[in-house]
Length: 154
Image 1 (cartoon, rainbow, N blue to C red):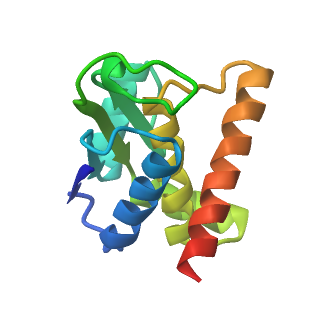
Image 2 (image 1 turned 90 degrees about the vertical axis):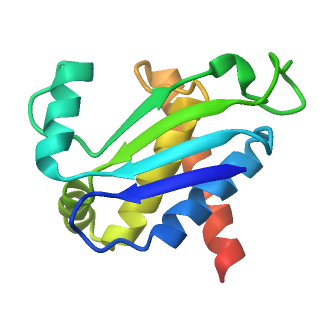
């Protein structure tokens, strides 16, 4: 699995851990090991611009996911894969927003970034949380992936 990460946020982030949690989520979800993912960490100004341009939102957001080639994702043994592995897409994280959310939630910024990375991976794999049932499924899966990653690290 090829995962590229670029930290353009100006904030010191443990990018190895972000890569590790992304790889864990993709492996656990049965994504083709030849697939590619890009993770970009940005500052508040750039995230605000992206959120406005692509989501119509005001202000910065914590994570954005831009799927590239949904037909190439191998979702696991229960679903049919649609072709050769390719670029899954891009996950864009904003560490400054994550830090504020982490403080509100009462946990470390690193934990928030790990959660947001898994959240972004799930969006790239087609999960959404617009409807209550979708939200329960996505957030339950997100919690299980984070728990299994943390258990594997300890």
